[in-house]
Image (cartoon, rainbow, N blue to C red; front, side):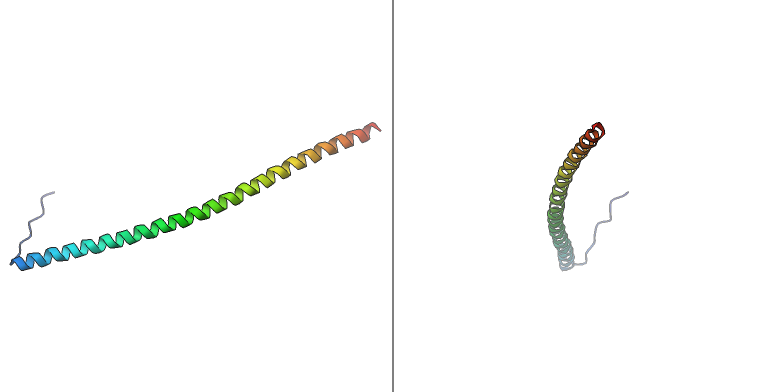
Length: 89
């Protein structure tokens, strides 16, 4: 890959106009990139809040299920004892 050929301008004014145009293009791209970054960051924050809410709901549901499971295990053990006692009568 060789070096790009240097730009040649007819006049100083043409060169100044060219570089102003290049600067404006780069400025526009930078502004667009900044806007995209800000939009992405806001979407990320919104998504994080959504995930945190969902996680809290799942943790609450999990605790409820663990409690229910423990209660059902105790009931099962009580039924086992009760049926065992009935077999002895």
